[in-house]
View 1 (cartoon, one colour):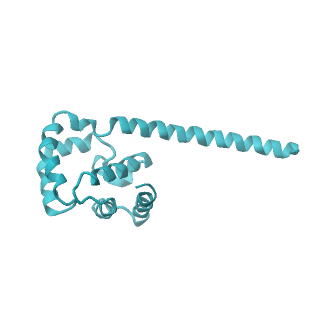
View 2: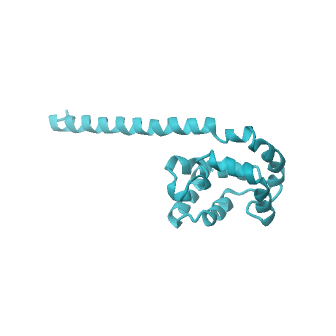
View 3: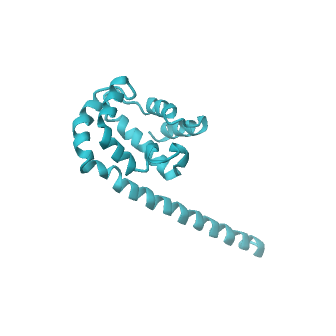
Length: 153
């Protein structure tokens, strides 16, 4: 039999558990929405034309290679529009990764994983390494991304 004090403690603990569940639910709802809307801007002009031409080319080259970077450069206005309309890209934010939310970061990491699967020689760990340098990610955030990739991918 619990004491009155233990019952009161348990009641407060159950309130805390319910609150954490509700807050996690808000993140889940946002992540589901992000999944539904992810990269929708690629499906219409001005992006669809550029991505139709360059997606197959990008898939055949190594991520981060000079050839890959030339193809990305050629995407020019389509890529600029894409970054401007998709907050999971560091280029969307004035201060890059430093202005992103946890939800942005998670969508970005999952995007990197999915993109790595489109390349003939794609590798999420290599993508994290290259992007960490490109976007000047802290060693701590880079390690968190590596841990997440190891655990979930």
